[in-house]
Length: 424
Image 1 (tube, one colour):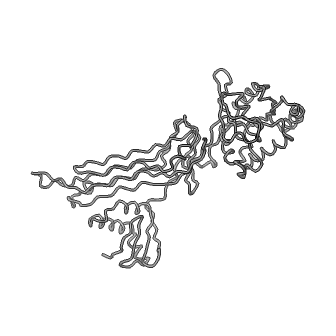
Image 2 (image 1 turned 90 degrees about the vertical axis):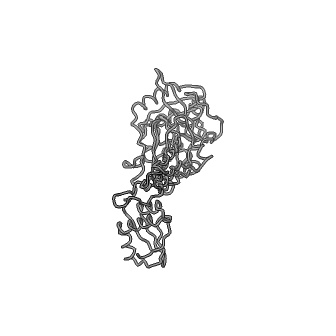
Image 3 (image 1 turned 135 degrees about the vertical axis):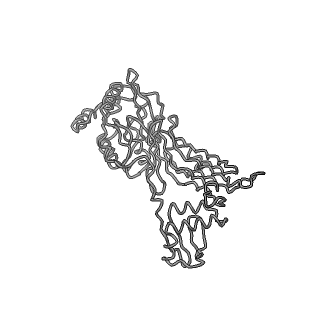
């Protein structure tokens, strides 16, 4: 089954904990600290797999976690680096933060890759804290926890040419006539419920990719039927074939309705080169309509071509016309905004922090750096707890808490750590 959307949870690996250890060997009475650093956690990385054409994998599995870094050991043995988790997606996949909708990545070509979440930094072992004034430090750090997010993945097919029109206009028949694609074809509306791609040969080794976009109906731009699910696949195409049904009661009315739905969905659709193709010329009704349709379309300044996808009449000439249009078409703008880039946005200043009064006697300190340090602190050891207190003092957090009204015995929450305030 074709899936072009998915919602998944990803978490990068935790950094490994640093070790508190001292060298203990015979005849070496003053061995000194030899506790090593932990290893960094694995990253979450997305890469393009050109052989994938659906997000089906991410409907079978929703949760993904990179490997944690190994803990530091004795004798300065650094913990192992956690393995990155590389997730493959088909070309044309956009990655957004599920909560904010922020664009994190747009993976289009075979070499595209983006690191969505970096692994947690490793904790330092006590060998890193040795100094001339403290030659036997009993201080180490825990590894930084990995980052986590819910993401939405959305696949927008990458095709040179998109075939659009009302249901049963003959889009699938046309695609099968010009390529080796074999979409399901029947004589009732909504036969096609997923886009189909076909490679069309022009000659001399030149090819182009056509996409049969499922039939659009009035209200598609507002999500009626499966409107949004279908329209997103038109966004990346460079040329549109607007296929008119020669057996319809009023082909011109269908043409105006589809153009309106395209413009309502994204005004840039009007800028795409478009050729209007009148299908089913093997039918008497279509032959009667053809002169009127041609006159109206050409009056709008658009190229017009009549075919019978079922018999092949006019189809080869259409291929060459579309190829010429494609040669002149501008490249597709991939992002909704000129400044929108397929990279993770800069995070807030690490030095920033804020204090909130949760309720009487309970305070919360928020800030990227201080929360990370809290997560990395061994509070069960006096030396590391005292080091954390010095950091609070140095960053001005202790003074700010006192000014806000913190009292002896109050609870102070920093990240996932719940601490009791004590005046020294």
